[in-house]
Every structure is written in structure tokens, then in C-alpha cells.
Image (cartoon, rainbow, N blue to C red):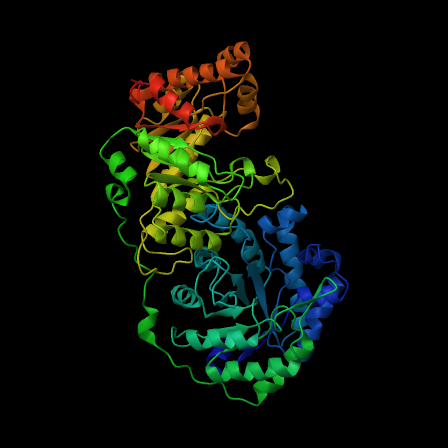
Length: 617
């Protein structure tokens, strides 16, 4: 197209096209296929969509490459075709654009969380973005558009790759829900401020919401940045009819809001999901009738930096357990599984018994082996309120997304709970409900980073919270892991994420534990060893074969085999656990004993056998 995109942006309003996926679906593409692969297998279908938008009067065509990175294409077995798919997409858009329309290379997020929230490193993210971006640039796009990003950090990585490769104009857009937050909880204000610091030409919004809510986002954003802003809403919220999504906003409605966007100060308008050529045609008519509005800029807001994190509360000040650990005292805890009913009376009484016998804390697992039980969070509140003994609450990544996790954590802190054991959680398929779904937005490393952020006054989305939290953060480790080096590497990542103490899986073999302890001799965090008093030979076999992270050596299996089941077997299990505790006691700063079969007396007996608690008088 003659003239510069940047010049046009400075002089007036630029109209982008509308939805690609919606139009391909209408033309017969199956909903579960890879739409980017249609650039190769159904080129005419893609070309027809582009041609319809050009005829409708758009200034910019977006390539059909939103999900054309190797990570997303891998789900369809197409990761080796990144270059071919992106090349074909640019060729099809360029042919339809002719001399009068610019071509924008469309780039979406990777669809996986970036560290510190997820497992994808910055280097891995760069490696996924680079081939797609390079191919789009080499194939001749006029500009790049980054769409529907939820994480400003991921956007920063993608833009950084693009800037190394080219000086092409860049449009960077986030996607926001009806609460004005991205999928990870970043507010529109935070997104706009941080995106303003990136080397992009336009920042703004696309997808997620309809025009009315996007206007509200624009009215906030216009006061926060001097950069041109974009609005590409969906054609309203979709309505599901007979299993299909329909976008019901009329072309007149979309055109009216395009006017309002422009009058408010937007320089780029267009559409996203559900918008069709008829909507773009109506927007073109609206633009012809208007002069672009002037922005009301608040330059002072632009220089605002990312939220400065507060100093975490000292470990000794977080809880009684934290104070004991900080002072180097040996601590004891007993793990009690929540009941399967709503009646917590018996469990509370067991905790009272533990307090009377000098136990420092009660350890409460969260849905052990993916079973449904009384909420461990509620149980922890009841125990601390009614008994007065501190709890160490397991908090898992399995059942909640990161927004739900943050809400839980704020609530737990408000309720007075302070000690957390952060774990990934057992998958549902090994539990009572194998068809239940798991979330796993993050693993225990990512969740540790989230809690550290909350402790430093910053939420998941990078927004400040009025009062920093003060959780004591524990993490788990398996000394008997088959790949011990990998297990220790993950432990070190947890420590880098902010872990403050360590609890091990049950120790049955002191030799295995000492091998592990030698490998982490440079780690100075308190180590609390786990112990499990076996109750029968069948229990020993189960622990060895079906409990993740547990490893029962053959000699111990043989000892339990000889005892079979019953009181003698339980006594043998107590002796075995006590022997292991006594052997490693000088190498740890605490012991956590599981109350097998719910019998807290057995846990007390283990601690006595291990020389931690005094013998009965």
C-alpha cells in the first residue's frame, strides 16, 4: 500500500479487518481442526475471507497465523510446518491486499504460562516466537500485531524478539474479561502502563468482550498513555444455541461503537470474534463521517514503573513455627487427613490430644490421592480456633486456576493461617474421581512464586495489594526419587522462588536420606523429614507401588511381610519409623509423622521411639 502505516496512524484512523476463525467456521471448517493449517490445505477458503474484508473497506488485513507457533501447532502434529504455514499465510493476505491494503502478521500468545507463573522459560518462549516472527517478516508483512495477550511479561518477550529482527510497526493488544482483567488477573491499568514502556507503536484491546465494555477500557487507557490506542472487540458476548456460539451484535451497533471509540481517542479500530465483513463495512462508513478525536494524555502516568515489591516479613515473625525454625529448634508435626464427612469433631479432638503431648503443629493434606474430603482450609481454621495448635496447610495446584488460588490465599491470610506446604497435587486419575478435571495452571514452583509475590505486596497480575501477606512457605521433596538430580534441581527452583523450609516424603531407609542430604549440603533451609508408620504388609506394598514419592526398601518390606497385619504389624511399623528417625535426627530440624489409620497415638509413639519425645512415664 502506498504511504506509511505510521504516517496514516499519525494523521487519522486505521481500520483493521474482523474475525478470521469465525468466518472460516461459517465457510465449513471443522471447529476442532487447526485453522492456521488451512493456509496450506484450503487456501481458497482463506483467500475468500481476506477478499471479503478488502471489499468491505479495511485498511489492514491480518494474516491467518494467530496460533502458528510451534508450541500451539504441536497439538496438531504440525510443529515442523511453522515456516510453511506462516509463509503461505502472508502470500494469501498479500494477494488479496493488492496495493491498497497493508498486511499485518498476526501473532498470538503461546498458550502456556511463562516463568515465574509457569514452566516455560524466557529462552524457550523466545525460541517459540522467533521462527514465526522471522518468517512473517521475511515473507513481507507491513507490520506485526500481537493479539490477546494476558501476561505483559510474555508480550515483552515477544516484542523483544520482533525488535531484534525488525523495525516494523507493532500493534500490541491484551484481552480482558468483564472485570477488566486478563486471564491471569492483570488489570487493564497495569497492562497499559507496562505495555507503554515497550517498543510498540500501538497498544490496546481485542477479543473477550463486546463494544460497550471495551469503550470503558478505552476511557481508562486514554488517560494513562500517549501512545495510539486500538479497539477490536468481539461482536458482543457469544450466545450458545444448539452447541454453537453465535455473535449477535448487529453491524449498526458495531459501527456506532466504532464512532464512540474514535471520538474517545482510538486510532485503530476493527473487530475480533464474531465480526464479519458486514461489520467492517459499517465501520468504514462511520469513519468516513468523523474526524479522529484528540487524546487526553496524562504523560506523568506513563513513566510509572512496575510495582515495587515490599520486603518480606522475617521468617521468625510469620508464625510460631517460623520462630522455632529461625531459632534452630527441632520441631514436630503430625499429619492428619481431613474426614470424609462434614463433622470435624473427632479430628479436632485428635489435635487437642497432640497439643497436650507437645506437638508443635498439625499438618493437613489437601485432597490426598485426589480424594474428596472436608475442605482442608476450613479444617485448618477450625483447629487453630478451637484447639490453638498451629497448622501447616497443604495447598495444591490441582483444583484451582491462578485467580482462584489468589482468592484462597488472601482469604486464608485474613483467617489467620500462616503456614503453607506448597505442592503440585496428585492427579485425579489416581483418586476416587478419575473423570474429574484438573487445572494445574502452575506447578509448585510457580505457586511458590505467586505466594512470594503476595508476601511482597504484588498479586498474580502484577498489581499492588494494599497489605503484603506473611505466609511461611514450605515445599516438598522426595529423597528417594529415581532421578534424584532432577528432583534436587526442582528443589533449588522452589528455593529460588522463595521457599523457606522443606518437608520430605516419608523416610524409610536412612541410607537413601543421607545420600540426598549430602547432595544438598549447601542448602541451608530447615529440613523436616517425613515418617510413615506402616500398619501392615499390604500397606507397605501399597506405599511402595501406588503412593507418589514413597519408596519402601526390600528389607523393610520383608520385616512387614513377617508381621502380616494387626497389632504386631502396627508395632513393627512404629519401630521401623522410629529407627529411621533416630538414625537421621541429627541431620534434620524437624519430624513430620503421618497418623496412619487416623491413629495419632501411633504418631506419638514414633516420635518417642525416635528419641524426639520423652518416653511415657
